[in-house]
Image (cartoon, rainbow, N blue to C red; front, side, top):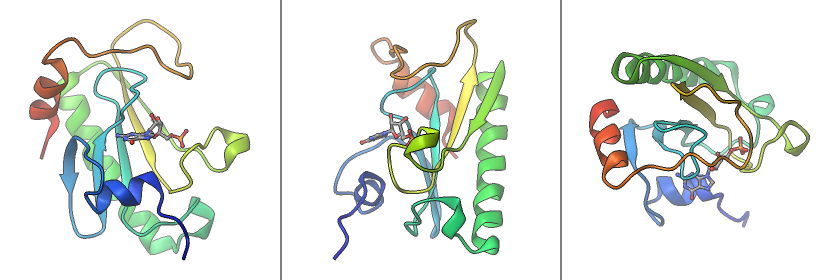
Length: 133
Ligand code: 5GP
């Protein structure tokens, strides 16, 4: 059997995460190494490696959730925002399970990997409470 991705382990609650939204086909949670505070990953529960393997209707459903998360994050955290989606290692994909990055931009700095953004004590919980729905 194929080994579970880290995101399948999050979906199956084998590892913990800070979930902001969940339905029967999608989950959204805070990135563990945020580019900026409030960086969220939106993930389909069905494990496709890239969007190239996804049926169009499932991709469009996922985009609807991305749109909802984008609006929630922007409404609560303000500023600018990037939507980023990587396919294959050559394009920067590390976790082989489709996901969208929703990255609020409130600091004047470039995005680079690995990120040095860090939550102060209690700050992550406050942001989580704000953007959860
Ligand atoms: P990629 O480079 O594949 O587009 O992005 C994968 C993202 O998953 C990275 O931003 C990384 O910080 C995040 N990530 C990797 N492992 C974990 C984890 O165990 N928990 C959470 N919440 N995020 C993770």
